[in-house]
Image 1: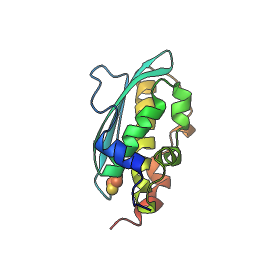
Image 2: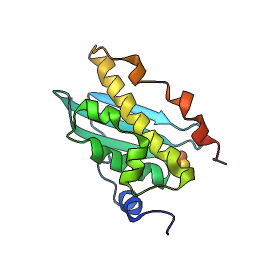
Image 3: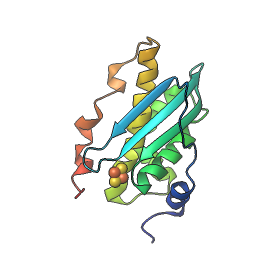
Image 4: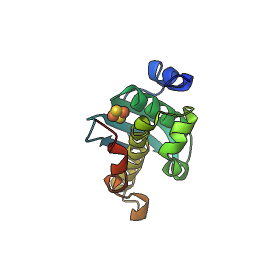
Length: 147
Ligand code: FES
């Protein structure tokens, strides 16, 4: 089997929703300290629905494919569904990522969460802090295989 699925290659070479939303309602930026890759997600939200989403990823191919797929998965969806999107679901939608590239999909989950938190903060909307754990508490294990 090829290292990367056709879907990964497709979303890497032809990423969906690339760019910036100037009047975004929420912006989330996260990075991976080990590889130095950075992902930024912009959300446009109306009546709790993510009506538009764009991303800028300065990172590896798997991170770009993950951002592209993640934006497709949450576009048009309620915030509650976007909050439930896990990196595993992103990787599965891409027909898998190599084990040492799973951390790239974590960036997508974290960036979406950070953008929703930003939206809540900007609008004074109360939220359960448990829904927004510090990502680096639990994801360190994903970094150990990096060189
Ligand atoms: Fe850093 Fe993929 S996100 S190597």
